[in-house]
View 1 (cartoon, rainbow, N blue to C red):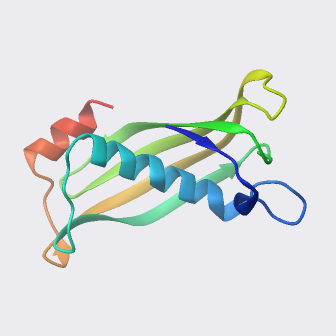
View 2: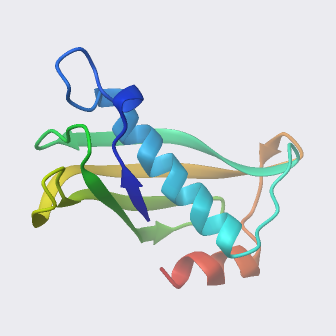
Length: 129
């Protein structure tokens, strides 16, 4: 998923505020589910239980970023996703493929307010990325 860095994403120094990298990863996970037709509700959703984040370089206003997601582990009721954010191009249009951020995100599947077993359709869907 590609994301453009807007002024609202930056801090007073003109670089992307650290919490926004996590928001970008969340958008990519959500967009993947939306595109796959997954219909979450308050009774059927994922919650983040752990994030290990590595900030490598800063993105700045105007950058085009690419968020890539892969699954490193699927368990009965949770998954571990590896997410990376790359700078694809900058404000000057210069093409780049520069790693800026990585995160290992653990999510638990919630069913009716409790941790629930991932159904086979979700396992198949996430195994495909």
